[in-house]
Image 1 (cartoon, rainbow, N blue to C red):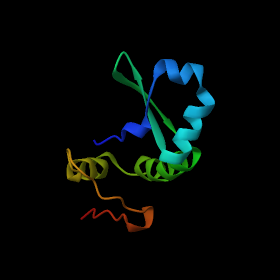
Image 2 (tube, helix red, strand yellow):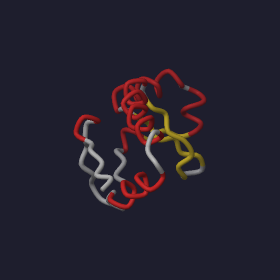
Image 3 (tube, helix red, strand yellow):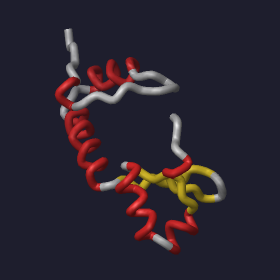
Length: 93
């Protein structure tokens, strides 16, 4: 996963200046929070959360075997293509 340095904040920065971190999440879509220089949490903008929620809700409606097919087909590393929910289709045959 490639993370923009603009989308990283420290845990102490999040505690001290939440409003600025929230604004950064709005502009970047999400902000990665580091604690002791290690990933600790992710702060999503509302728009990004809503976008991901649609996909998560769709996955929750699938059977386990279909979810396994999807996860096995995902790239393990590198750049990933972004799809809209309308572009997703699952072959269950």
